[in-house]
Image (cartoon, rainbow, N blue to C red; front, side):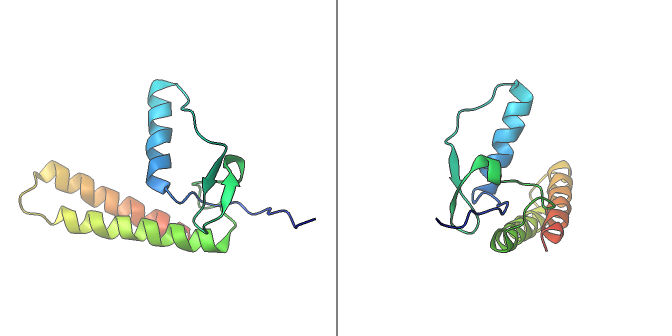
Length: 109
């Protein structure tokens, strides 16, 4: 028999999972989803073996994937916050998003 994967992974579609969790929290209705998802290390795993929490993820490849994803999000938000055509309130939100994503990226290192 093959060795069982005991690692905790991160989903490849991180932002879709964040949005899904927010909608479920807001509506109180759980969405239907498949039993498995593709992970940051390109493996198919059950949702029970997947987490968005940096302190739970034990797969090194998934941690590196999540770090790069959150860092990219931080850089995009920081760049967008410098747009002179946006209202100040939006710029502030983007700046806060950039800082938040950078902290999560750091947690995955």
